Length: 367
Ligand code: SAH
Image (cartoon, protein in one colour):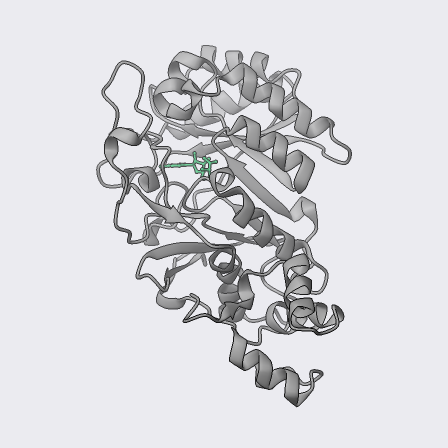
């Protein structure tokens, strides 16, 4: 997104923006003004920044830019879910999804071009991995979507919540993801509360602790199995950070001031992880973690070998968890007709990983 030597102001979080202006010999308060122009008002030209003097605007145009990725495809599903395919400066494409609901509008944001984790049920993993997204490319997804969606009849933004649940593992791109989230949380920019920004991880234990110390947004964890043997197969990262260590990190996260619960995501795979004994085991596992469970009906994609659990099986599984006192909801499948549902985001990327570098399932050759 950066052309030549110009600084792309999209990628600067509030403190980096202040450093940038101080570096130009300007007053730090310019940072708040420019953040507001770019993110609150959706401006991408310096000419429109009317409370900034002509001389500084000209200077900015010389040394900086506000460069958004190009929208290649803009699709709307029958249920109102909308998906954008965005082309980055290097030609890679990523996907961003807007999910409208009665009481909120959620944007699902990508953090990497592809993913290294190779979870067996996820389309993104099957695509391989190319690179981390820059902070500018992460926040630009929110900027582009806000612009495209406009405002509701009361003049409010359509996007009220952000989930870092698109392509990639956000905690493997820690610094850029945190910079982008700081812009989401900043009052001059998007002003979202920490409750309304959720980061989902497959279980990067040390990075969960770092996040707790750095930027305490809501945490979601992709659990998907009640025991290590099964989780090793579904989420190969479990071989590095097994369930007990992961749950310890979750307990530390919620015990930090102000955090309430961790959301555990659990994809429902027919005959794999959806039995009643597995529901009971899951309930026991989570009995001492302040938690909420999101059951996600599996979304198939070409080359996937799993099937979605039947509705009654999912309901029964949910009932076992609820009877054990766990708050449980079944996530409604949204945007399936445009391949925008969980685990279906693939973008268009060139896989640069050597397959042998990936963590393979136990007992199998990797990749
Ligand atoms: N890497 C992060 C962010 C991705 S979030 C993480 O693992 O949490 C995307 C969510 O959708 C995760 O919970 C993921 O496990 C789930 N998911 C992936 N593939 C899916 C599929 N095919 N059907 C349903 N859910 C899926």
